[in-house]
Picture 1 (cartoon, rainbow, N blue to C red):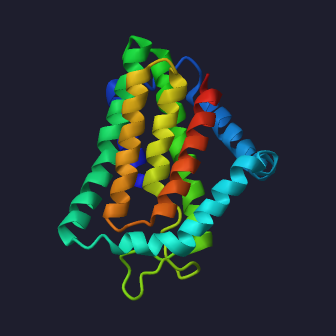
Picture 2 (picture 1 turned 120 degrees about the horizontal axis):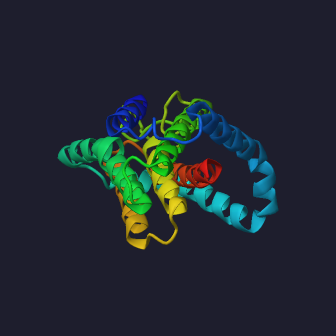
Length: 234
């Protein structure tokens, strides 16, 4: 994920859109981070308030962890598929989706060097940095074993692994949610971003880097953060 942030910063500087932001870059970063931190603190209360959604989702995720993850992962048994999936998921997250999302935002704003595009890029960069910190904290707390690890590979928790949740899924869906909120009426661009996010996430399963539940939780987290981040930037 560190490479991803470096690539995004380099792309923004190359295009010249960060200096075009009308507001102070630090003000945009501060507002975005503050909104995300507040949303993180309010997440338990929101989960209780919307229990009709969160309870079935949590129960389904728990059932998948207990009964489905290992069985589904065992069906992937091809070293070439795993290698190619790993390479393409990295390319999708690091290069393909960021380029698509930034280009789409510039087209929607009708100008590559507009302040709106600069703000969008800076909000996205902040969201990805926050996203990375949140995912790494959860990974450290959960300690879930990855599917490819030597031994049983059963996805046990508190075993020193870094599988739960998927950082690639969280990062990819953050970008898709950012673009969807940037211009909700840009149907085809938004569909393309969601499809790319789904592709990047699915490849983490066929790469045996993550179990399905890791990907689902990462995608939900990324969508949540991406939606709130872009609201902060406007």
